[in-house]
Length: 308
Ligand SMILES: [Fe+2]
Image (cartoon, rainbow, N blue to C red; front, side, top):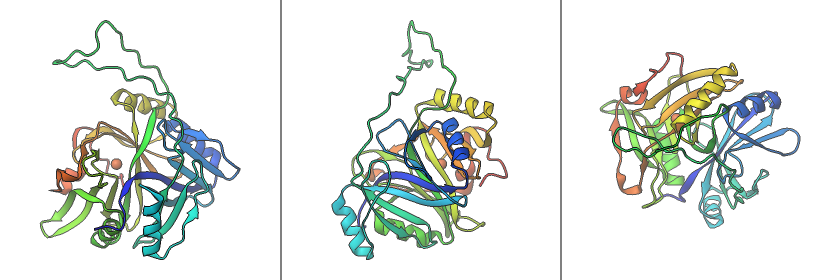
């Protein structure tokens, strides 16, 4: 039994020496700025999260991942068990935060009590015709140019030095459930895609992915859900036209099934657009998979040798 259960990933936090450079990239990526004081950059998606990406002024790097808890009661339980303080979250939406360090020193911020933002106006979904079901009749499809419409943050991937140790740490505290574990050999697993335990409520195939990587611990990538496949492609065209740095995509993952598209921010952090991922409940079990499953695609660009 875990101390609490994470409901979802809340945000990722970085630092960058030039907030204007970061801001310009994130606008091209499809995030929306939340005005705030000097020296801090907060960006949101179109959904109700008050922010999903934060950048402090400073030396470039990953600073923290936030997970949302169900209640302040849960946050108090976590704080007590960890001997940690509850602080005010100085960010859009307010709320309270408990800051922990995982076995590799990654800062993990558990948050509760944030005030949701009013969702922004998202273009209505345009139905798709396929050969079996024609959902769009007597209506033409016209996709206007522009950045993708990021709705929400979906998952964060961290490289760790000891997969089993980190897996235990996150599961004991936040109740994550393995969706797919990656076995390098039948006896040795190096990674797992983990989902939140939301009971019978379907949730993303993975909210957290931990990978024991040869290059050592650190941030791997953060992934943002966009409206649909057209939006992935619209975002791709926009980022390419803006001269941004492509990392991998477009393709469809095997594990999690998402259509994906990865880009690097100006400071080298990898961010992903995705759509059409698998949604599982707590009862949907756990699988074992292989390295080819992890890096393979169902269609689209194969993984570049310099990715991750
Ligand atoms: Fe991802």
